Length: 230
Length: 192
Image (cartoon, rainbow over all chains, first blue to last red; front, side):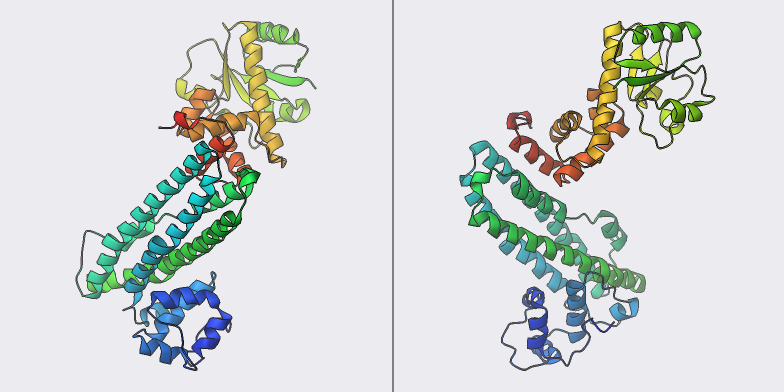
């Protein structure tokens, strides 16, 4: 149990040094770098984030096997949950996907036309899927949560629908990596290929952890809200 | 190596005719036949058939007879049999087929199963049959449509797809389509 992050008095600088991957979640919670010697609790409070919420998300993000208890979830201030998830979507769509697309366009220039076209089309279709997936969450799921948080019960949607339909966005990224690793003509391996694979692996991991946050934190929290509001 | 054929058929006339027809071919070894399903379990062990020719009126679920042995079962048809039942067989021969067609069907079905086994043994090259399935997957066909097109059971199609995924590391249909085009297996104009 000791390996998990549960001490709000530890220095934020030390935490991020030990777990650099948490830089991603800082940004999505609106926490800027330059913490000096301030503790996790102090830094969070300066930016209006509940320290318990920050540590909960950090644990899910850094340790794939971490399972928060129901009590932990119900006792945590979830005000920042929906903004955090929305910011994550924004980051994937506005930053990471364009990076990958940029590299892919460069790679395609060195490929025979037909191959380049096929790869670009594969990515285009994938991007549309991602946008649909996030669009549904932004417009339906998150609004449902915000309504519940305001004490309104919206009977047209509930969390069990989310659980039934939550698809994974990582498989196709994995396919793209396989295609690049194994099936691209040898002549096109370049810095762009390496950069793109690196970006894809980063995005895959990030999406995976994002869905863990949704499944391990958001779903149990909202199921509880639904029961208590209705 | 000869293909060992086990015939399971109640009619002695049919058994005799088919045995002598297949016996002419040096590639087949016809095992002593069964006239019903009695004793099949023991015969699978002692005869080690590579392919079974079975009258579908004896078994509507051929896969259940074989437990977990991977032997193709070919339906031998000379009367009306429910199409649904025939679909569960790996291939169909009609008694009115000429000998060339019958031989071809048996060879094809045993080869496709053989390559399936080989592929499970760890080769990463797609077999010819896997390539056939991949092309159909890339064209957007469902498992059932592929089974109909290639004249094999849905079960066989699913096994091929698992092998393809395992060998290529590619899971999505869209990814397999890219693979097929990169390897010149299909033309991008074949896509919608």
